[in-house]
Length: 112
Image (cartoon, rainbow, N blue to C red):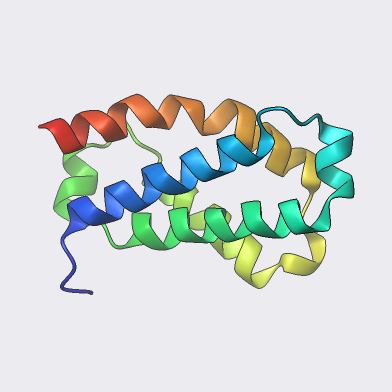
């Protein structure tokens, strides 16, 4: 495990979420699906989220068990290892349904 403080990993997750949201805010699904550059940038940010979440110490994951640590890591694994069969509608739903609820609890961790 890296010697980098785990709180910095939380910041990395928040920055990646912010980056995804900035890229997709004024975009509909069809525009997203047609923009290979945007897709690749968003998928990279999902890799960052997954890598950072995997680096959170287990004791912190247990302490903040309301967060879907495993799902964040799993999304990274799909993007990195199953890149050839990524389902864009699932990515789009994840952007709009799964990422927003993460922001407040992650910010609260940093403020604790």
